[in-house]
Length: 319
Image (cartoon, rainbow, N blue to C red):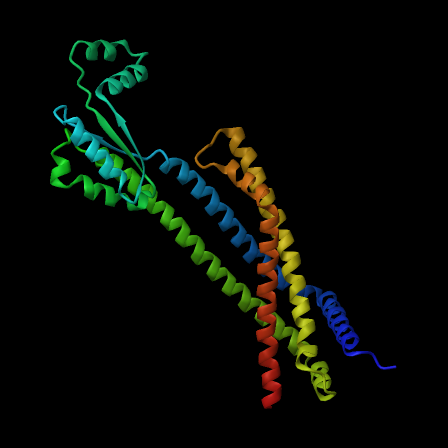
């Protein structure tokens, strides 16, 4: 009794899988070379992703403290002050607006300098010199110029007793933070693209070498009427093994790296970056990272092998 169509397809898939596994084991040294490059690529990709998340988290903590202080003249009327605050709130990049009165500003100053009697004595001898302040917290520091442009308008400028806090050294520091954020994200994206292309090219050449080593076997299979996918399938399965193994190793390496780095930085109190967040991020997103790494590894291997075998099969057909 002949097997049914479904049964034949199952048998074919089983043979393709077993042949691919046999090729993977038979070409151990070739497999190691391909997996090493894929491992390097996946490790760099994962490292860049977690580093970018960690750096973004650190920058977010810094930029969350960024605000623009507008110092008002004592002569500003309550109606003008309220209109200014309402107009600022309408700006698209404004996250929140807080008003600090002269009395509150003086109280805050006294609380901040309660351990410095000289400063407290000096300010108590004069009438409250501190201005009322409007503190603006932006949503995106990269677009902070929009707020600055509004504050530079003549009708707004006349209400101010001094330059806003977004000037001089503070402006330079904020600009450097935003530039560093953009640079890291752009560099990470370029790095992922470059190393993915390199990995595909190396795996492509690896499969080409495997095809060359088995060219006589493949020619006989073609002459016997084997289908394109029956010839191509084992190579795809073989590279899928590359992707799965390389992704598992990369996750172990990167996870261990950030765990050790986290404990080391905590032990030495080198809090330049929130390295501990990297370990937490890895743990919280472990299954997503695992799935993504395997998916990327399988995709890189499968696409490379399909292109390599397509070139060979096309060449054999035209020949």
